[in-house]
Image (cartoon, rainbow over all chains, first blue to last red; front, side):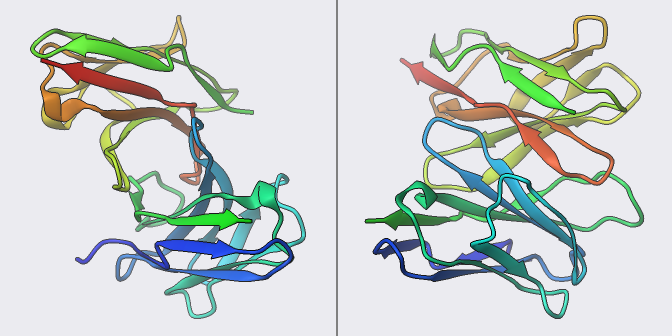
Length: 116
Length: 112
């Protein structure tokens, strides 16, 4: 069990550029979540997957954000035409749940995005 | 809709003193409550969770929390803190699909 890994750890980009982050969940975890955290705030839900199906996307998420989990394993989060307000820590978490149960989430260390 | 309010943004405490972090929630459905801790430059880790059953929940590192339905609270306590408990603590409420709604966090600073 190597934990949830996220890549890159840090990303600096210019406004208007596209960025993509990757999350590798714990092996065999069927649920994968993306959160965003800004300074002084708790993590904010963005979207989540059950296997390869994206089950929910936050209403706060603009159309510039898209996430995929093509084979039900790793996931990518893409932000198009980045804005300075997108600067935040992007967190990925995973869990294994049978059915619609509740299990603890395992979080990665996050990707820190800075948009200049 | 679910939401969580953490009443203290920062709690300074001396080493070996007790600490209590306050959390109030609102939820229109079944309540599943969690406390997570975030150490500097690390990912969030689960301290404890309440899903059902006993209202007093014991977690890792000597922490415990009590679910109080009438007061809609889930306060976190530790009787004696260590320097290593310096971290940010997040209370969260979950829906039935495991989606967490976090509070804004409480920064605990332990000094000798």
